Image (cartoon, rainbow, N blue to C red; front, side, top):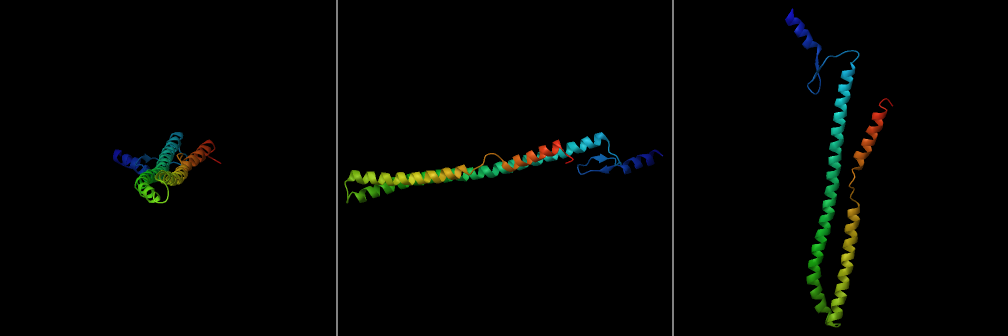
Length: 150
């Protein structure tokens, strides 16, 4: 008799997705409902954290690429400035005085630097630090938590 009652007790339990056993009933107890809500809330929070991580990683990648472009343009501009300036100065020195040739070349490179700065700044402004989708879903979750039946 003891074996069959233990066997029946095992048959009445179901194994849930988390491996926990539950006794099915027509009207779940308050403890079961609270447990289910707690499980759902935990899954929801983990999902929101994963979404935030993904968004932040995506934006950090964009920021890294923009910063790399700014650094690369700075380095390339510096090399071009040095070598090209010397060549241009000596080339222009055949037409105008050496001092004027140096001033003209310096003005051209100032213009190039300004253009590179503007492009880099515009790309850096496109980077969003705040995870917009996560913020939106968190607001929706908060509204749902306040009114779960609506």
